[in-house]
Amino acid sequence: MATDPTSATNGVSENNNSLVVCFGEMLIDFVPTVAGVSLAEAPAFKKAPGGAPANVAVGIARLGGSSAFIGKVGDDEFGYMLAKILKDNNVNNSGVRFDPTARTALAFVTLRADGEREFLFFRNPSADMRFHEAELDVTLIKQAGIFHYGSISLIEEPSRSTHLAAMGIAKKAGCFLSYDPNLRLALWPSPEAARQGIMSIWNQADLIKISEDEITFLTGIDDPYSDEVVLRKLFHPNLKLLIVTEGSAGCRYYTKEFKGRVPGVKVKPVDTTGAGDSFVSGILNSIASDQSVCQDEKRLREALLFANACGGLTVTERGAIPALPTKDAVLQFLSNQK
Image 1 (cartoon, rainbow, N blue to C red):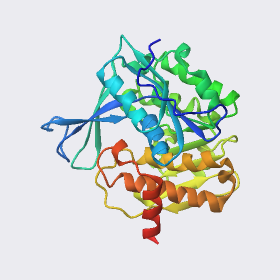
Image 2 (tube, rainbow, N blue to C red):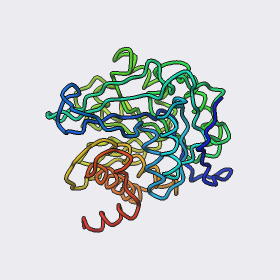
Image 3 (spheres, rainbow, N blue to C red):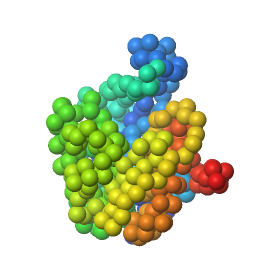
Image 4 (spheres, one colour):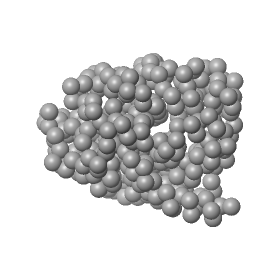
């Protein structure tokens, strides 16, 4: 098992309940230097760090929270670059592993003129797919107050078994489990495999964040705005909080006791990459400070407004990680909105 010469533990102590450990993929996004073109039309590409769980870890650290990332990259220039980016952003990267036989994952991403994102992935197989259970930093997982993950690591073995083992360790240690499915249909063998894979771990999460498109995909019902559809098809008895993000319109929230909507914030969008991950960072940072926020509607609404502002600020700049805001920037932005 390769370890990292650029490792940073950032003084994380045992049983640090405010620590958020993010598990999953970290990769290199290649983004066209010109906006509004297809991948084929792009004259050149600029590299940027990506991967939703890694973005969330950096977002939390940027907000002043305590975070760690667990995942696997290639034993290559890009892999070591990504590990260093985590360290430079005050994310504990001691759970990062390096694969000598598989490369760091690459994704070419563009926002076309019609507003749709186009993805082309190079993962055949990439290092994150080859993450073995024996490589897990079990001690780090047990230190977490919150364990956060997506669904991309569920697509293939051995990463699927590693993901399930990590969730089991976290659950047994009393961690709060946070799940953002982050559907990337092109990576799954079929839509049905995606639906089954995403739903296979649904009932174990304490918090789930989904988008309107994901509601339609997972339920097969065309009305993602229906509270009845969400509560009947997607809410489960162990869930403490279900959040539906609506982009610039804000978000909806559902708990056993209450439900409601928090409006979005007004910004001029430049690049929507990372907005959802920044939102997740915002809400998890609030929950990490005090998990009882999920039971108090007034405080939950404040936390969700803060998360909306995190997402909103992120779209005003290019790239995901460079655009993730600080806590001061979010509070300043919210005070200016009043």
